[in-house]
Image (cartoon, helix red, strand yellow):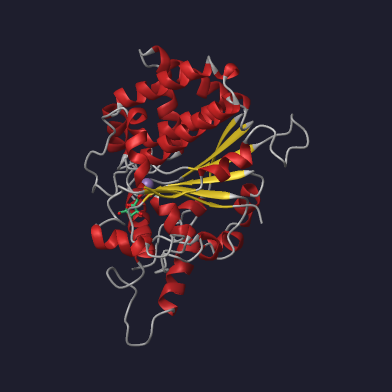
Length: 368
Ligand SMILES: O=P(O)(O)OC[C@H]1O[C@](O)(CO)[C@@H](O)[C@@H]1O
Ligand SMILES: [Mn+2]
């Protein structure tokens, strides 16, 4: 693990972190290196080194090596994307007549769509195609059995109409979504955000993406804008309707896209208030923060070898800008907040339960 040389916004922080990792090693350990240093660190470092190679190579210094596969994932998921947008637009026209229970059911549906959308990342599949080919809405029922931690009720309690915390019905309700993968997963997140606004469960949604190409399929500002443009220019009337709505949400500021270098640093999130206090302050403005995906979960929990039953709140190690929820399919060998015996039982019947993306969680850490 050699220091970064090319001057970039995060170069110094990265090199300090390399020194820090080296300082954790004993005299006989040698240099920090692949297969020896913590996986979270070396894996992030690999993607940052790819970026270093690119920025050292004008005129392709803003080339995104993963762009083509991200775009392909979106195109290959067309049918599912259209099915989702059709469902959403038709639902919106009936929203006024839904009672509270029906609204809650729809909210839960969009949350689950966003959860299973996280199966579609390109890092786990080694860059091989990982698009969504079936209609996810009709599969939600059978997938429910694979949700290991389900705190959706807490999210409802936090956002539902007439919630206890509501003093002024016109008050702003900000939901933050820390994005993960572009392509199909991003569509599921946008559809969820669209539903939140249309149903007035939220008044503004803030998205957080990556400043550089990351873990193959993660969303950058360019991916985000590209996807909205693609939707807009689609020949499908529901998808193009969604694209137009998304564009206008962005224009009027009901949707805001933010990037910050912190998301592509190797630090766990409990270091955010120190390393990126401005971002921490920004997140504190949210009523609820949704963290999408596996890598965010690893960073939330510090990617440590926690016991399965350790409370989520403890694993967060003081990270609590606002009530937050991880929405993640399991792809890495870490999981906290399970019932006693739950992890052991799964391990006995299915040794790869932690890494295949088959299982999912909605894991919530509420108001303090
Ligand atoms: O896109 P996600 O859900 O963060 O998944 C990425 C995951 O894939 C891997 O790169 C490989 O399993 C993990 O390191 C990482 O946590
Ligand atoms: Mn990802």
